[in-house]
Length: 320
Ligand SMILES: Nc1ncnc2c1ncn2[C@@H]1O[C@H](COP(=O)(O)OP(=O)(O)OP(=O)(O)O)[C@@H](O)[C@H]1O
Image (cartoon, rainbow, N blue to C red; front, side):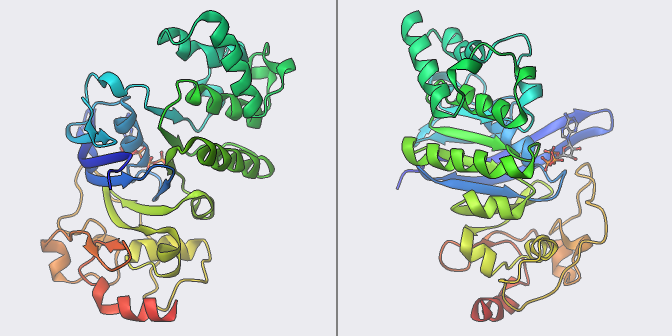
């Protein structure tokens, strides 16, 4: 079946004085229509760099993107520029402080010359109403709104061009815990109503589990494990995924190696040879330094890139 979004061999970096940081080192991902792929990993593992390359804020070094099977021009973006939009972590920093709520949501429509002026006003009103911003607030400036309201405006702005895909980069982590669930529920409802696909980035595994159909685990620019959400939750196979889950107190995962993250993430300027996780992995063997492990299918769409995963995968799956 054709996927809504396909990311193929994506490489993206940042030029620094010390060299090029290869933050995304050959990533393949796909997302179906109406589904969410949750992307997790420690700070600095490349999640935002991947998001920015997909949305076009950074030009990737190489790789391909396609939407509904139609390849996208990575530089000019062409017909698909409107199809992918982004919801940012900090709605205050990402909203122009001098524009009113109405203007903020209308601006992308004006730039893209979409609809007549009267139609734009009606459309924006309905959209703001849908995301829970009452009409009395449409003339307010961002600083006159609460964090949750600002994020609702950010979501309305992202949806104003009727995209097919939303990239949500830590969309609730700047919000109070009490408001987080409301914004997450809004995103889930909007997805159902509009058959949207989400790439949902968060360091919070519980949040990712709540909204996602699939989870991908990223480590130092590479995807090390991917699968259906409950499959990953109950049978995480990569030692890095197990380490992340141990920190959240996931007691659903099956028996398997205990891995603790005691050391720092290595610099992406000089990543370890072979498996990039090997310098922090208590299970590493010689092969891990010599050969890059490919993602291997483990059944039910669950894939893992670890030379040793097969040794304990039966135990983990049986116990789960
Ligand atoms: N603009 C930049 N210039 C130079 N290096 C950068 C830039 N942005 C990110 N990096 C580096 O790229 C690597 C990946 O960072 P990135 O922000 O993509 O990770 P992340 O997983 O999203 O982390 P976080 O959750 O902290 O944002 C890190 O080593 C980071 O220092």
